[in-house]
Image (cartoon, rainbow, N blue to C red; front, side, top):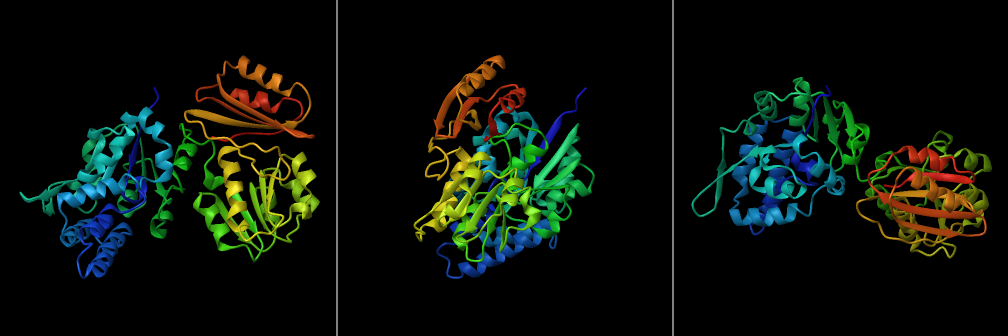
Length: 432
């Protein structure tokens, strides 16, 4: 009999992008004359605790004491936190809906602001474990419930020990209290979540570093919103003069970015995206060996590239022939749109196709030589696998056809092999 899996997820800097008590301080102390100094103290207490350099109970007591917060401030905080859910958690809302019985939120934060935020994601109230505030009759927060094990040092270990959970337990978090669950032997694996912050002392102790929730779902073969985690997509930027704005845009979108002065041989076989400074050349043998390469952004005139060879390999090229100053953000954005939605708008070598993302579906991209009968073969393949097509888009030029098919999320993945085997196929991938 298959064992049940339970996913124990932290809240601050994991489910959300921020530390809630730090954010509450910025709300409650907004008009305080010494607010900057107090903010710094609270942040220091947070970090010392997360890195295991100060007991959690001492950190919590000191932070609550400094807050000077009220229930009205909590309402403002909740509104703010709802906009600060980590992007990879937000896009995988469907996972929480389908696995509601298997997800626990376990946090040293407070139920008063955690429940309203995570409840939007179908996480059950009875599966949310956190501290609670103590307030006065007029709504001032003056303390917290010291009897709650989560207010103590090693509180997560004490709580999970008392719960006697069966099956495989997996922990996801960014701090020392999350790692303690692994150290105690209570959980099978600890995943250091680094989408928002990477604490070196935690990362080096983790069973697996997960830069996004997509990565966690991917390595555990669980349903996810995108087929392949962006942190596994290698984006190589080549050239000393590439603007920081370009690099920042690609990194912010979640790709694994490397910035080099030359196209180093060790990256050739594994690179998925290339952003090239004007004047940078790619040797024919390098291009031929770049079998995973999907798009090239050229910060200048792409005539210096062999675009015909790129087309034959199914590589979409974007350039800015006028060498406009805007290309530092224009070209990376075109590359990002292509990787995220399949949009080839303003490509120099592919049929231009611009289309929106369709929710609750999976998007398949098929690039092939432009010969008659390919669409018929594709749709016969979909029919043979009982796949319902939600939307389909085809654009061609003299040499290639570019098809995007949106299908219902439930399907037999054997269809991928069948689509790849269609004669004249150049490249096929599942976008999300």
